[in-house]
Image (spheres, helix red, strand yellow):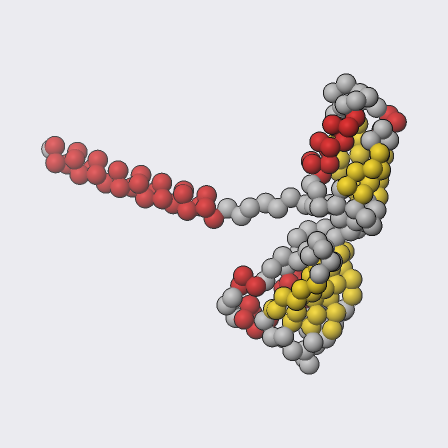
Length: 194
């Protein structure tokens, strides 16, 4: 009888241990959520609670800045909405006790990518979500029969304005190989399909 209880205990312990490993693997597999970064051309709705004169829609200028009453100019490009809220709250603290600032993205017009070359619908695409290369090619209607699918380049500028070319081999990704090259595009990226 004791052997029967001992056997049940061992089986239960093994089952619990394997469940713990499954939960750990699931937690590791969870994707990281990217926070949207404001771009020039975006329109932000800024509201300060209980302050009627401080509710405005502002356009993010080409230089990445915004202007707001009592705050002046702020650099918004590359920052999250929450970071801008904190920055405005800090500056308004000089004039208003404990300001409650909320910012929402009214229009994400600054997040543009370009697909050019031998695609069916080349052009500029305003995207309001994260788009990878394969999705951008799909948005452009796919490639023409004469395109060099394994010679695609993504042109990207760094913060200093220097341009770099990132190679993309469509055939590899289509076959399920080398999937890490299917990167998320950034605002201003140009996908060139020769």
